[in-house]
Image (cartoon, rainbow, N blue to C red; front, side, top):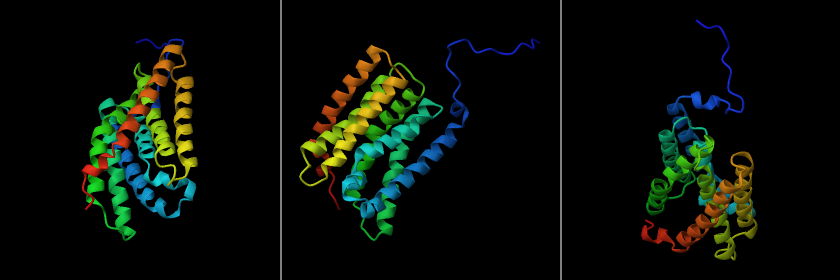
Length: 223
């Protein structure tokens, strides 16, 4: 038996210790974090300063949490589940906190966000995982996540700025662009992947505005 030490090839990727964790543990922890985020979101509506008040009703903030929870998930399939179940947990946590605060739960609104979790959650989980492993589609994943943040910010500035603080929506755009820039610098600094990420951000931002403007929640009776 050889006693020579194993040498990692020069320039090879370093092993990520988080990839050795049980995916079930990661999934369970992500659901727990989702419950906590949803729970705190409801209470945040009562104590956040005016400039941050839209955060308690922001799809972008929840989407970013789901994306980041999947970032270090050790398996792609579990990462997809993290994206969906963490969003489910946020809805459940929000409703539970609302009941504790003495408010009635709107089944229509909850159903809308559950449908949204099923539709968008898999992509958030998948995208977070692909960025975590630095795959070839990581630029698309980053662009999609950045596009949600930028798109929601632009929607806020152009559609509901009269009734909500513009500073928050400006912040959403800024966070989206900073997230994009940081990912480009750290994960795929070459020109072509960077351009793919920027282009995807622009397209998703436009699509997000189109969906939000359509006001799809009207199809879910608020009872």
